[in-house]
Amino acid sequence: LNRFTPDPSEFPFTLEQIQVLFYDDVFGTYNVGVGDAIDLVVYQDADGNPANGATLLATFHDTVKAVDGSTWSVYNLSSPVVVNGPGDVLIGVINRYVNDGVTLKSYPAGLDTSSSGGRSWIGWWSGSPPDPAVLPPDVYFDVISSILPGNWLVRGYGQTGAGGTPSPSPTAPSPTGTPPPSTGGPLHITLAWTDYPGTVPASKALVNDLDLEVIAPNGAHYYGNAGVYASGNSCLRDGKWDTCNNVEGVIIPGAPNGSYTVIVHAHNVPYGPQPFALVASGDYIREGTFIPADFVFLPMVKR
Image (cartoon, rainbow, N blue to C red; front, side):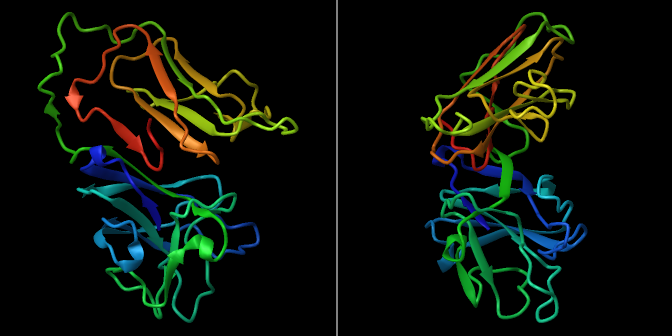
């Protein structure tokens, strides 16, 4: 499991989606395959130490969707989980495809071994994990760095507030005037941050790598600086993410009218937290008139 700590002002927090990056090489070394049974578990913990127990909020029975090490298995929760806080949101994966005493051990998720954040935990029981999987396990439970350095590639996505239809803000003005057309002029959204100082002999100057993603009302996804580089350029990761610059922009020439979701992904932040700035310009731009109008993408740190 990974331990996330939203800001107290973001509670209640509604978890709507869980994403897990699984990995198995071409030789099947890690014994995980597409379609293997897993449990996704969500806990709440108030004292920052899941080793002395945590409250189980939900269990979702599902399967592994991809094992190529680059495609995230995305799980839209059939029943979003409301975490009232304060404290931590714990998101975990149990590899149910492993039968105690029969199946070879495996990794329940991909592991980023480049650093250790001290928030990734691993545990196992003397037999098959119980259902419900109450913490702590009866054999072993500790941060993954007690075995080897790394962070589980498990993350959650949701929104502040308890979900449902938000209430109008008592101070926010109601929209007035003539409704805007179905499309407007170009919409510009720019992300910028002051990066941590790099070293002179480094092959790449960028240290803390953030990524900009914009989702339009019609479901189209746009990525920061997409189209600036030719496919396969050394500045691109997976053909779409800019890995060289601390300024990323999205330009939508004929922007559809509606609500846009802007996500800042913390792809690699070895020296954090990383403050950043976002700015948007275009026709008929209007800030949200409801509370909550704010989305968070765990484990992003907002400033």
